[in-house]
Length: 359
Image 1 (tube, helix red, strand yellow):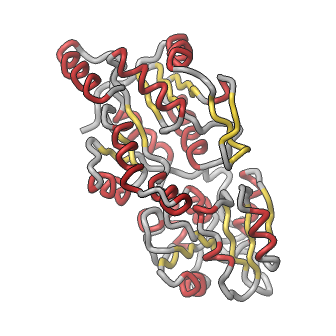
Image 2 (spheres, one colour; image 1 turned 135 degrees about the horizontal axis):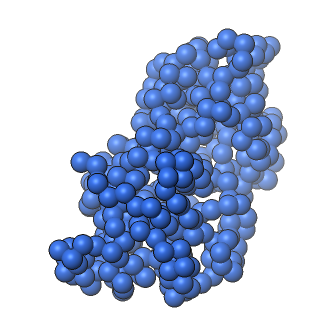
């Protein structure tokens, strides 16, 4: 049941924020915009409000260098009615500690599958990281997950109070070619990937395929130099503005998404909104966002998925993208929020919960 609580001032604490370019930032930007348009005041408390240090392995990402008292000072100045902690980074942990000490109600979100990333990249058992992530989210009034598959996965892993918070796409930027619904004709097909170029995105699975035509990669990241050297036939386009990226989507034939660990994949929606069919593995993210034919082909054989998607038209991807929207997603976010200061009847339970979950 949707909550009757409608806060005027919402604070979102996030370790991912501008100038970073990623799905978390895009989600928060669009959620804040949609909520602001409906009369809510939304403030993002990100690393830009504090001194920062580069993230190990991702020097372009800055991590906040602060304390719980420093985060509390910023939140207090904003006088929120509701608090959402978006990420499990330094700012997220600091805000969590402040909320627990003060008996505040708040919500959290699951944007990134860190347990799987760390197991694949550093051989850290996923069970260890899930233990830490469960501890982070346990005191929250609701843990927001981007898709039904991810929500079900989290429940199986022992997470409670999981709710869905979907995503949308800006159709003022991402739209199909103006002339009808067909893509520009090319002598050979273009298979495109867009997003962060890093180990966890599994780009080798795409770049090592023997495909007809051209392979394009849009975006940047720590794995780019190594992949460019190993796969000279691929065309690396670098970081793009949203409008330039939309133009690239409209020039391509198939969007290839080789990641097995994304929770959603906003680029999937962007590509489909431009009329581009998707080739991906049948894993959480693509299963919920693409769904399969006629929007794309999901197959454990990525080459077969690519060749199959090449035969699809643009009507299926366009219809699938249209079923998602930021207005609906923002309502889900809003319905999950709880009062910062719980009602008197709930205060005792909140204190007990905080005592068991903190420190």
